[in-house]
Image 1 (cartoon, rainbow, N blue to C red):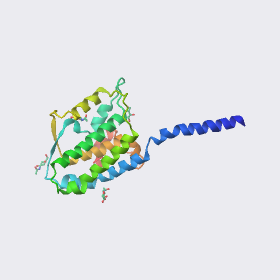
Image 2: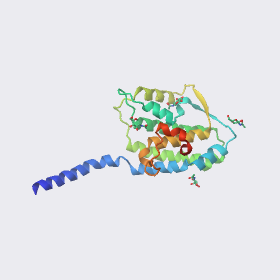
Image 3: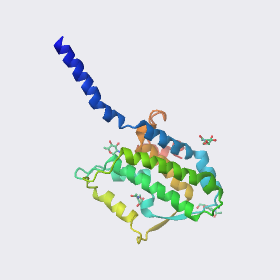
Image 4: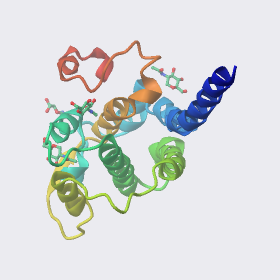
Length: 210
Ligand SMILES: *[C@@H]1O[C@H](CO)[C@@H](O)[C@H](O)[C@H]1NC(C)=O
Ligand SMILES: *[C@@H]1O[C@H](CO)[C@@H](O)[C@H](O)[C@H]1NC(C)=O
Ligand SMILES: *[C@@H]1O[C@H](CO)[C@@H](O)[C@H](O)[C@H]1NC(C)=O
Ligand SMILES: *[C@@H]1O[C@H](CO)[C@@H](O)[C@H](O)[C@H]1NC(C)=O
């Protein structure tokens, strides 16, 4: 009798201890990210980021602001001494893509439909997601970032750094979309029939990654 009560109690305590862990998967963070995802669907990307621009139009971004699936796999390659955490890559993703949206907004005239009908809203959705994300992932002051991540941040935030690359506006959001599915798998994996965006072998199969 006593023993079974003990077991019950331990079961309850275990449950309580587990709660914070299982809740860190954060449903509301995913809800917010899914609104971002819906605004990034292929139709909208094509209409607002391609058809609304002159053919082959490009804008200038810093090299480090190009953040693709290939970058993720390269940065994530095992380095026992300084392992890269998912969190490091998610932080980069968030910064780089908000910066990308800003860069496009900066070249758009005030009344351009891509600004008023699309990018301003998308920027707000990102901002809302960022607030939640920062709440759920408070900055860990103790953590020393792996050197390759630190170097990227240095260049991203160096206002005198001159390394420019031409990219199409659409490619910024295409990469945003793909890398989002890789880095925030927990939010998407169930519905997307387990198509793994992180998986290198999938990249060339193509059709779903556009
Ligand atoms: C993308 O979203 C728009 C607006 O919500 C919708 O009309 C369109 O059908 C969607 N396209 C795809 C491919 O899901
Ligand atoms: C756009 O770029 C493609 C591929 O680089 C090229 O073949 C095409 O001629 C370009 N179109 C225009 C209008 O410049
Ligand atoms: C991604 O890789 C490209 C080269 O393919 C590089 O120029 C860029 O700096 C990398 N981006 C990041 C964030 O590491
Ligand atoms: C990074 O590598 C680890 C270990 O190989 C793997 O479990 C994880 O899924 C990778 N993360 C990404 C975003 O590719």
